Length: 110
Image (cartoon, rainbow, N blue to C red; front, side, top):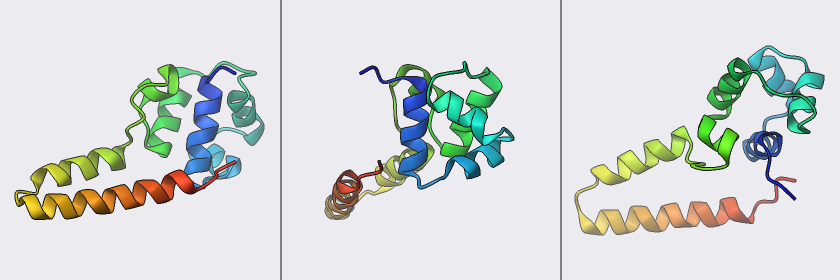
């Protein structure tokens, strides 16, 4: 099964615990329109795609191409991690990040 723009929107929305209604309201469209986007029934205007990426804090590259899933929060975490100078603190921070990633991976969003 192909990983489409609509599926990536739905997956990202669910990962963040945002309902269709909430996302639709935030980007100024109807729930039925968002549903049509998530099922790849309708093409998504670029303006709407940009709004979705902002609200879900994911890149348009990820939505369109399925690449670079790194979101704004992950970029912030990476920047903070890179500021740590002490090797022991870097090791501690990395272990905490790995724990969070394991928890994230264990959650079923479907």
